[in-house]
Length: 164
Image (cartoon, rainbow, N blue to C red; front, side, top):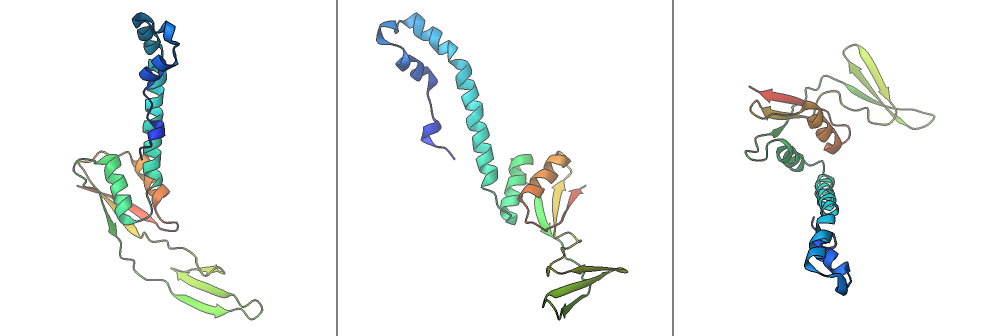
């Protein structure tokens, strides 16, 4: 995500901004030393900008999410995987039409409780995928959850499994 407008050579810029009659070797070196702090802050800004641009280019696709997690936590061996979880369908869904409004009402029996939704969607309580992490990979759990939550599809649940 490199853009040429962000590539600035501050040492050269400092020399070009000086008037020609002040471009003595000692004064040029002094101005270049003074501009070093600005150059350092600019380098940090471009690094931050590139990292944010990389994260924004990620989508909810499994391959992109796996690449993001591997780039963040296991860049060399790339051992973090994402596995689909097979859901067990224990819930029953009954569709009825409301005579007055014509809305479809979904009724679902969850182990004795009954959930009713008028939006045709009530979400899924079981996880849709599993993030598998080998024990050799050191991972900050809060950062991992934040990355997955930020990039997964809405309504999808996940679990984190650490292999021994």
